[in-house]
Length: 363
Image 1 (cartoon, helix red, strand yellow):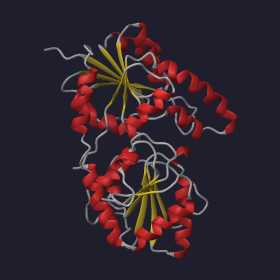
Image 2: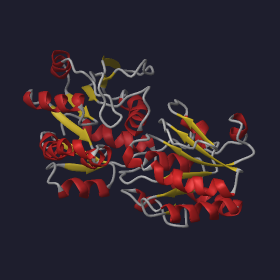
Image 3: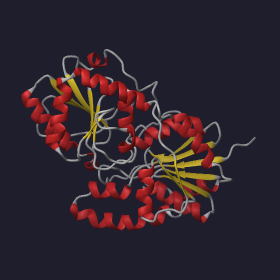
Image 4: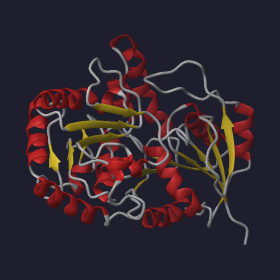
């Protein structure tokens, strides 16, 4: 039986790691059992080998909020859409935007996954002089998504956010998963990084403005002045703080599990999230997590049961929670065990199985 042809259009892809790239890395092998897949994505370098055809678009030399958009060859993208039965978009960057636009003209079945509240990201990331453009985007984004036949949200919280904006007519909620076999606790990981003598506080992910790593930095700096046996590990993006004593920064990795395993405490100080895949991965790694109560985090994380919550931007409160965890290995262990138990409720196979059902052209 011939498989339906699925075009995945995305402005995020490996080897540039972020939540969307991680999502695709997990689900593409599952979806390939049911679809003949082509991927239209930016050229961030040599991508992994997948059971799919990959079409790369070069990056523009300019960047917006730390993001270099792709330069889309419209004719190439149109040809890809012509040959597809289903168009599955991940973003409203140039590739995602034109994919939805052309697919609608060709009357293709268009499904869009809402990975982030994009208008919130622009508001947090752009300086004041560019926020006029962000305001325009806030008006445009709903119109673009309204051209999709189906919108997929990773949580009910995201669904409510887009419904409040009047976005989309047909929606479905499909939660993200986590790989509990890859993300798990492991001894000696700290030693491999030369951090065995420290209590390691860590973060994994993009270092863009909405993640508010400055709040984590300020709390750490105060703690470090009192205790030189702590260390801050920032993985996934570059930081350039004035005082880097006691801080290790590893910008890009393709094995984040290694760095989770070297941490004692995970912190997410973000001002906007949908699911926060990195928080789930930290929990699967049996870490006590200290995070802001954004998006779906409010559902799976119960304060002082399987993690700790703090208000966005509150340096003093974050510092007090970190002090408590640093002083009590027993508390860290208890929260970490509960966190891993929670993470086992989330499965990529379940996510992929639900995606297969809604991506079928008959839907």
